[in-house]
Figure (cartoon, rainbow, N blue to C red):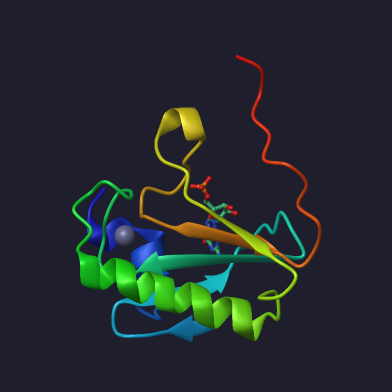
Length: 116
Ligand code: 5GP
Ligand code: ZN
């Protein structure tokens, strides 16, 4: 998928939807279909298909800064939260632009996967 067709490229660029945080290299916005009381997506502004697709250290650091800002803004720093990134078919990745799910605001229970 090219950058021009990528929905998260457009959102990160501020062309659609609403950002709750941004810095030079990363942006954060509410998931359209929240799976927890707090469900925010943190993305790089540059297009990478997933976490192993050539993401440079400065971009990763900017994404961590975004996570820190989001957990402060949503007041989940003390209660706890989970950060996950789905990659590829087995993980059910639906959008091929690197994104970290920040989940919290409630007890998330154990991390569960189906029996193998
Ligand atoms: P994945 O399954 O790829 O890890 O997660 C993709 C996430 O993106 C899903 O939780 C889905 O609800 C969210 N999502 C998909 N399209 C949009 C959109 O256009 N706007 C927002 N805010 N979230 C989206
Ligand atoms: Zn993209």
